[in-house]
Every structure is written in structure tokens, then in C-alpha cells.
Figure (cartoon, rainbow, N blue to C red):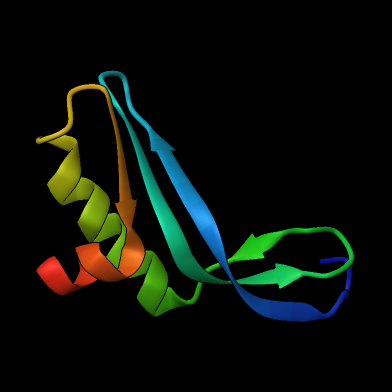
Length: 74
């Protein structure tokens, strides 16, 4: 929205639920160099949704995963 340049990088994605927190490290993202807004491609967003849906039934408290390892396990 601010018209800044976006930079390809990796970010940590955090999803919080009533019973757990899922942290996925090194997720490919685009980040605005001006305001810091993080954007995920449609493909990455879909993968994140699939991963979180699958993991939230297994995680009881806090879990940290590497994006590449979780995607390969799917």
C-alpha cells in the first residue's frame, strides 16, 4: 500500500490458537522495504494453511518447525 519496494526474504510465521502456538521458521516471503509489511505468495499461503491445519491437532503447547522440512513431510 505504501508503494515501497518488496524484497524476497525468509520470515517466521506464527499462528496462535486457543490451545497452542505454531511457529514456522524460514518461510519464503516478500517484505516491503519501506513499511515492513510481509506478503506471502498464494502458493506459500496455501501451504501454510495446510501445514497449520495438520499440525494444530498434534500440538498441545508451542511447536517450532522449519518450513522446508514441514513442506517435504506433507
